[in-house]
Amino acid sequence: MAFRVTPWEVEGDVDYQKLMKEFGVKPLTKKLLQRIKAHTGELHYMLRRGIFISHRDLNWLLDEYEKGNKFFLYTGRGPSGHTHLGHLIPWIFTKWLQDKFKAELYFQMTDDEKFLFNQKLSLKQANSFAYENALDVIALGFKPGLTKIIIDSECAGVLYPLAIKVAKRLTFSVVKAVFGFKNSTNVGSIFFTSVQAVPAFLPSVLKGKNIPCLIPHGIDQDPHFRVSRDILPKLGYYKPASIHNIFFPSLKQGNKMSASLPDTAIFTTDTPELVKRKIWNAFTGGRESIEQQRRLGGNPEICPVFKYYFFLFERDDAKLEERRQACMQGKLLCGECKQELIKRVNAFLEEHQKKRKQAKGSIKKYLFKR
Ligand code: TRP
Image (cartoon, rainbow, N blue to C red; front, side):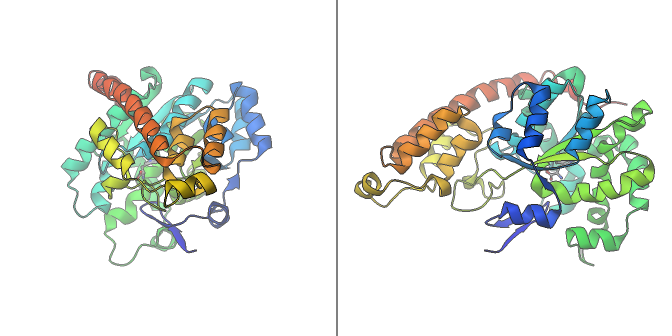
């Protein structure tokens, strides 16, 4: 089946094995996971379950770490709307990495990008979503002293002199080939990947020495960093390493959760009633009738409700497996499974929304300042 993955849109049923080959990234092998575990003592469930699936240069990063050359973390968000649960996947994992490796995190809010790529979004709107989304980042518990949030449009004085160094090495024919730009693409969009490259070497500039960088991100962002990896060594910096997660499911059949189709996604700002309605209306891997379901069992492989447990709401592997078995054997019906999920999502959001509110008071401590 045909699929297409770019940093701005994901279409069709993604074949990750094929995508990894196409992008030229390496699978996260058992051996590499063991190597991580040697430092962290345990493996995050997203690593155990293959939610993080591939990487670039992770062995090199760990070689450096073992030599005493510590790395920093870099990730980001294009603030085109409120945060949905899918956005939290790399952030939750990044928080774990920050704790385990005591690493600094640079978090980029690309309000410039969303303004440039989205016809309907004003710069002011994108900027105000950057602040909204920052509350979600802070609510996850990142350490204030170790975490710096860069809002692009407000940090131009720092970003611009570095972005033009990247841009000078980058031709139109390269970005055209990598991102599929056309002659009708606005020149801001053509330039933009230069800005996304900057946090990957900004700490090295600030501290006056080369520091390895690890970027956890959704695999759709890889084309940006393929470009960064080509150019940074030419400027005298390390190539950034990266680790990639697969996409969080839509509540409807197929596709990745999408902010542009609000009923297919749960946002961190949703009310309990809205969560209930969205999950209640979700597609499932269930049968047409209760009788058939009891007799034939459901199909968790294609079920977004099951995948919600898999990605976020059942972190105990044994319990997840029990749920899978109960579904396939027709012992667990979709109604019960949805009801339990509604309960767990709402419990999570109640806590998250409380922390989000508290974050309003501490946002200044997180904003990058030069
Ligand atoms: N372009 C990303 C988006 O649209 C935002 C982003 C900027 C990012 N820097 C990043 C994402 C680094 C992951 C890692 O969401």
